[in-house]
Length: 257
Ligand SMILES: [Zn+2]
Image (tube, rainbow, N blue to C red; front, side, top):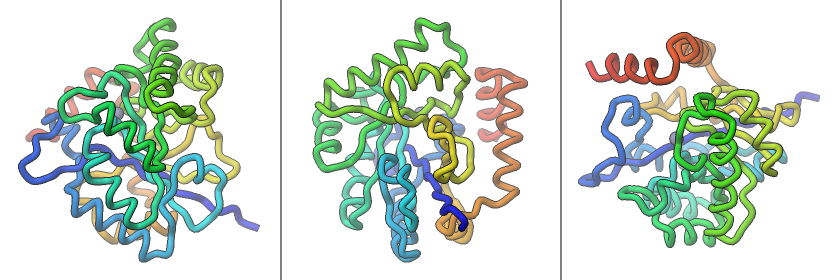
């Protein structure tokens, strides 16, 4: 019997007419979808007779489902994503960077609490959104442990899932996440997950602006094209070769042209 593979989608800030984005650099904006584009994705999932679910739900691998996740904790999580998801009866996991809470463009404390009370899952996206492999052990520990604690104190619920800022992780991240009591760690490696997957290295597919509809429909069927996977592998190789800071500079230079 083949085990069902589940795709985990990764979204970021959503764009609304007249609303300023949290960041303007090209490397950030390419991950920002217009609100109608996000809605079209959710409708495509519904039309494929799939359910959008949280990470907790998805790692039970019930089949016929797609995990919907958001990184960063932008206020459009609450303003745009939550109403759309609610209308379709979908669940989702919102990974929040604790230091962003209450900052301009990000979720306020009350929005974060409302998101959680509305039944959506809150995960940690670290304390300060630093690239974790660049940190020394003490700082790294704080990013993983303290973000969990502070988010739990804010929403009054256990935070069981962690996602890595910029998709960057190393073995220490996995070890500390286990030690802190998380159940999963999500990366940005574009691969599907199944009951055989390592829950501390979950793959996710980051959605980019202007994603072709036919590619998205293929994703809904659990297929990730080889070209897409290859591009992601090349990006990963470039990050390792250049280092995180240099990679970001080169990427913004190329995308900004
Ligand atoms: Zn992030």
